Length: 315
Image (cartoon, rainbow, N blue to C red; front, side, top):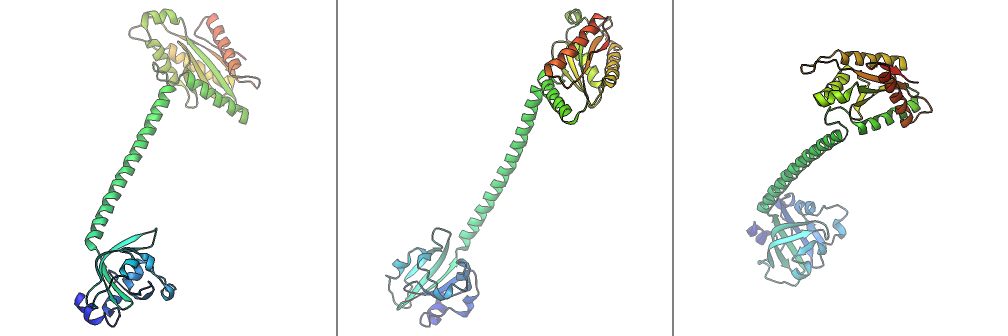
């Protein structure tokens, strides 16, 4: 290519036809003020050429290294390049492209011919691919870490709201749930029945048989409740049951069924009958959290006083 340029272009100051449409080769002619006189397709692509630019297109500042000012100070014979090597050309404060080329000068005209550094482009492309792969892996790791974090947060939340002995909701979870149900009642007017439960003669049972009975009672209520009901352990042997959208009559039926199921259970290591008592009440418009729990507790107390293994309604 160098021979052809020396013979055909240096004195004619024309870009050879064979180079005009090649995008991998940059070829252009400028005067010593930096005004473009002619340019091939490769140069136009390099600098995002617009047809409106060519007439008054000055590219002095596009020469980043070496600078255009430096190049205009160099003279040589027409057949000898005034510069050979890497040319950094680009838009100031934006992007830069490196080409390997030669610059020839004839009087006040400069001919620049260069080609992209394919090896460097391939190396850069390979680096970009590696970076993309690393970024992709980092993104996958981040997604995995976020998923693990959400799982851990869920586990922590469940632990905070779960009674460790019985593995059913604890007092904190109950307080949260009853607050939601009271708000729903106030908004939509749905009935809300509440029951308090207690294992009969628990102290004597617990002293002899330990916590197994508490776990059995919790499991029994969990299995016999409806899907909409909510059972929680709120104290040593005390449990609360929320029955949303349930009248007091319906609640009595559900709770009495729970009582019967539990009292019918048998134990391989216990030779006595174990029962529980329940107190039920219905949320009233004037109620708050304390008043409705107090009324359910009064019903439970009456069930204990009247012989145990009973369900008493307190309105």
